[in-house]
Image (cartoon, rainbow, N blue to C red; front, side, top):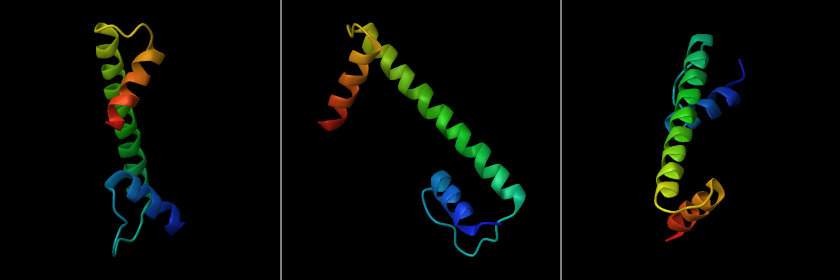
Length: 74
């Protein structure tokens, strides 16, 4: 098993590199499912933020995304 791939996947899910963990196929499957869940959650949160912006006056999703980007800067 490619330890670099496992290490990158583990870091994507947990935010830190693994220490003293031997990768298994089951662990890689779990990490891939967990990462997919995290991505889906982030997309849902972003869509909710866009919907809120549009409910208060953003004329399009592009405008809503621009508002959100500007808010993140400040």
